[in-house]
Amino acid sequence: MAKIYKDATDALKDFKSGMTLMSGGFGLCGIAENCIDALTLMDVKDLTVISNNIGNSGRGLVKILIQKKIKKAYCSYVGGNPDLEEQMLKNEIDVELVPQGTFSERIRAAGLGIRAFYTPTGYGTLVAEGKDEKTFDRPCILETALHADFAIIKAQKADPYGNLWFKETARNFSPLMAMAAKTTIVEVEELVELGDIKAEDVHLPGLFVQRIFQGSDYKNEIEFLKLEGEK
Amino acid sequence: MADEVILLIGSDVSVNLGIGLPTLIAERMNPESNVMIQSENGVLGVAGRPTKETLSPTLINAGKETISISKGASFFDSSLSFGMIRGGHIDYCVLGGMEVDAKRNLANWMIPGKKVTGMGGAMDLVNGARQVIIMMTHFNKHGEPKLLGQCVLPLTGKNVVDLVVTDKGIFKPNGSKFEVIKLAPGVNEKDLKLA
Image (cartoon, rainbow over all chains, first blue to last red; front, side, top):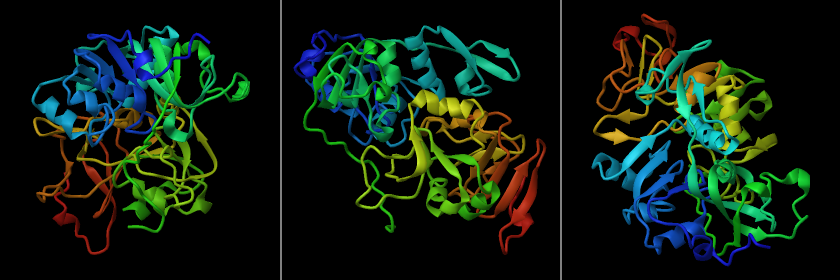
C-alpha cells in the first residue's frame, strides 16, 4: 500500500529546515525512537518542535536539541531535561511553556478544526499574559490551535491503512498529534495485516496517518525503575 | 504526610497525584478503599509499584516511574485525561508546592533566573479538580516557611488551594489567613510562623 515506507529516513525524506514538528511521547514513553535517530543524521535546522518534554535525561529529542537544530519549542515540562533548561536559561532557544491540558487541547483543536477555545487553566498566571480574557462561570483565557507540518509518533501496532493501537500509557499525545499534522509518520513495533486490529479496538483511524514503517531496535527505556518492595 | 492525605480523601473517590511526594500515596493506599487514582499521562486506576513480572516500560505515572494498575483501570490519550481533570470529574488532586499563600494561591513551577521545571499539568489540575490539596514540607531547605501571606514566586493558580498538608500539620487558607485544622504531634503553632 502507498502508505508503507522503508524506514525513518525514507519517511522523513521531504522534512526540511524551518518546519514545525510534533513528536509524541510522555518523557521517553512512546517516543518515535527511529525517527528521532534519523533526524540526528539529517541536515535540518531552525525547527519548531512541539513535544511535551523535548526528550529527557539526555535521551529522545535531546539528541537533536544538543545539535542546536531546534529554534523554538512548545512543551509543558522540562524538569529532568537539564540540556533544555540550560539552553533556556542562556536564551539559546525560544521555549513556550504550555500547561499540559492546554497543550494537548491546542493540538487536538488543530486536528479537529477548532481555531481557539477559552479555558480557566493559566488564568492569573504568566501563561495568561497577552491573551484575551473572558469570564463565563469563572475567568478564562483564550488559547489557539497548534498545527504542524510533520508529526512523528510511535504505535505498538498499525495496519497498512494506518489504523493504530497503542500499548498502555504510550498513547499520550500521539493520536492528537497525528490529527494535527499535515503529514503524520508512524513507526511501529508490529506492522500487521488489514483486519488484524479489530475495528472496535482501533485507537486512531488510519485516515489521520500518511506514512507508516516497521521500526527496529527499540530500546523502550525506563526513566525511573520502581519495583515493589524496593526502597 | 501521605497517610494524612489518605485519611482526608477517604474512600470511593477519584484522585490525581502529582509528581514527587504525592506519588507516595499510591504506594500506601489500601486497595480496599476503592480510590481510583488518575495519572495525567493517561491512566485511571494506578496501583502500587510493579513486580518484576508485571513491569512494563510503557506503564508509567506522571513522574515517569514504573507502576502497576488495579482491576477496572483504563488507558486514554492526554486530551481525554485532561478533559477528566478540567471537566471537574476528578474529586481530588494532590500536588507538591514551593509556596502557598493565605489567599489560596499556589506557586510550584519556576524560580525566575534559577530553575524552570515547567508547570506540566499543575495549572490544569488546580483549576479542574474539585478539591486541591497541596502536600509539601512546611519549611524550605533554607528554613523559611512555605506557607505565606502572599506568594513571591510566579503562580500556578490563583485562588485554587483548599488544603495544605505538611510535616507540621494540616492547614486551610481562608483568603486572609491559614486556619489550623490539625497539628502533628509535638508541634507548637507559634513555631510555624503561619501567615
